[in-house]
Length: 350
Ligand code: NAD
Image (cartoon, rainbow, N blue to C red):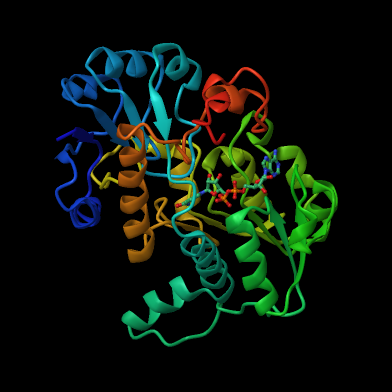
């Protein structure tokens, strides 16, 4: 039986993977995150399974391969934390779960928006204290307002539909607009200028790093609400903090934070030297921060486990890997060109 080293295990991961595994693999569950110091744990394993904040740099890739790991199964959609050049050089195959429940993430974005706008977080805290005052809880109708969707892939399109359900006008920006969505595409500048709500759903790549920064924040509709369920690095957090303080941004619903890997998924309440920007952000009444939990539904966890194990099945059976992230195809901007040997053999679907 093939052995899988499963990193950064939480109780909900073990539950969903044990259910889906059903004796297929010998899975060892480790609590530690996959980064350099954890690599020796992978000695003698055939596969490693890691999550969104793992740090899979060159040394980790080399270390895994030296210890016998042949495939890295990312149990998430994003892959900005993997050194693909190194994976290609050392011959480590990398697979992921491209879609497990885009509904989970889009619905969480909607939850952040409604909570912020209607001050549900404050109202719930007040009534627990038998404070039934409504002062300071005034929101605004979403109906008739404009939602700007940045990134119109699986999640962005579902969030666009949710916004339409509220009776909002929806406009969109995407580096690769897709006419089949039927969405009204505009430039990023126009989107920022016209949107009452901006929701980020594009990947974190060099071109989108700090897409929301001091300059772009000057272009937004004053008082707008910003929602980010994609990746923290899309926003310059210090610039956002300044815009929240000046009122240029009226509220922010954040499921991700650019330096989240040090904090998220763990109880860090005992740490006294906290991250200053993060502390200031969470202290603001018009900011809601969740700990990268947009994916966390029963349906998504079940799909993540099933697809991860199916990816491993395909690899060990020598079948084409539907969910491989191919270095050659990545390098050609996501559009496969020459140079991908596996593609020529029908093994890469990049
Ligand atoms: P997707 O690949 O289906 O869609 C991404 C969209 O972004 C595509 O339409 C693409 O053309 C567009 N895009 C690419 N580069 C761009 C650029 N430079 N500027 C503007 N748009 C660009 O991805 P998805 O499944 O919709 O996921 C979107 C993002 O959500 C992921 O990249 C991931 O980071 C994040 N995510 C977060 C969670 C969570 O729990 N918070 C869970 C899953 C995914």
